[in-house]
Image 1: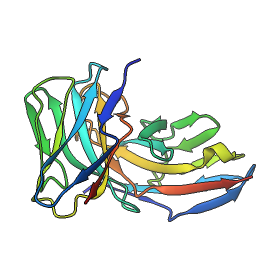
Image 2 (image 1 turned 120 degrees about the horizontal axis):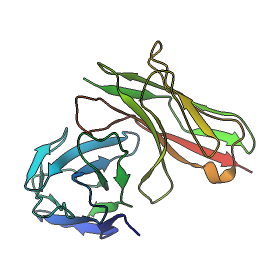
Image 3 (image 1 turned 45 degrees about the horizontal axis):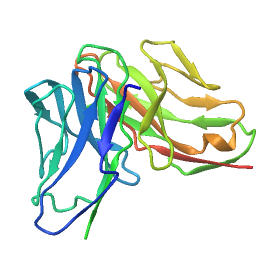
Image 4 (image 1 turned 30 degrees about the vertical axis):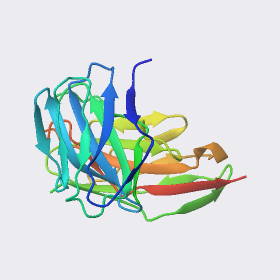
Length: 114
Length: 113
């Protein structure tokens, strides 16, 4: 079945360490997104990519980095500069930027600090 | 900028009760509106959508009508079930923002048997 796969489901980070969250989709979607979810704050957009080899900052990009070398993959790196990384991270995709199709979501990665 | 405001939660109901979760928005132009549902430990799933004024989205007994005059998209269900317990998110997509979504804070719904 087509869908979005996020891994790992749970991730722990030590102080000063960078960690990378994986997001893979086999829906042949052009656009991909990373959101951060904190209790009571809804979803906030970190980065998004409308096409391969291109991405834009969202509303809370500081302390994060991304790459989009392949259409199906959009990994997110949480760097040591992100001082409060504990959250639930969700990856999403949609057909293309002009489409009115809904975003499809993965099952998320929960990141915690050791 | 764009914003979505949902009624404060959590909401606790008994099975078969009527559900309303309020959602209002601020955006220029004519955004598309969505309701997503998140079950525990999972990602979000699209519940329903409406793309223009007076459209009614419906799915699994849930309904919401796009009201431009009141900038609202309230979610309703006539008879909730225990399996409806989840977090519900209202979201908008402005036509000039590509496919970016702006989400509300989410409303936790618990349905007791």
